[in-house]
Image (cartoon, rainbow, N blue to C red; front, side, top):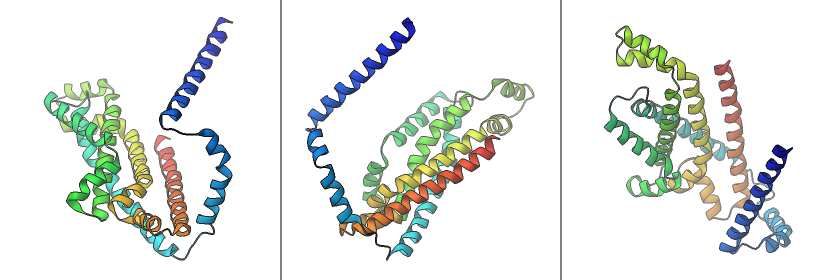
Length: 258
């Protein structure tokens, strides 16, 4: 009985703390909940007036740019995957050989992972100007930072028995990597790589608006010139592409893990 009572107390405490944080945050940013609720119907009406009916006159161009976006996202994920694999070898406790190199690579991966893609786009814009290459570069950096961390975590779970057995036979470092570490971690590596590609497609809208290229560039233009009916179609196209790729990657993951 005391267990359920303690659980109810924890739940109540969690809800109270969440409520207090919400109130404090709302007051800090001067957010008026009552005003939002009372003006919500007017906001819906405004949305309908701006975005409906959808304008499909540039659908062909949108599909073409969406294809460019997907291609850039996949290429960036592949680049990040290759770089992250070798970085993870230097980071993982199972495969690292040099503590100094481990520290440097870990700091580099952390830096690239924790700076948002929008910030990377703005910073690199000064060097590379607008275009698909800048979008590819930004997504490659983000993919590298993310995948280096998850690859290293997957390698840390490699069984030491297999590694020690190969070491006892006199196997070289790379023979151990490709005969022990890679086969055991390959499903996780592929799964995380697919997730990185999926995440790149989601992020491509913001990156394209800032760096140029792909569907994000069109969305930025539609917003700038207040072509909201075309903007809605472009956003729906991005959502559809993400959902389709999500289903494809889910099928690939399911086949790998079987």
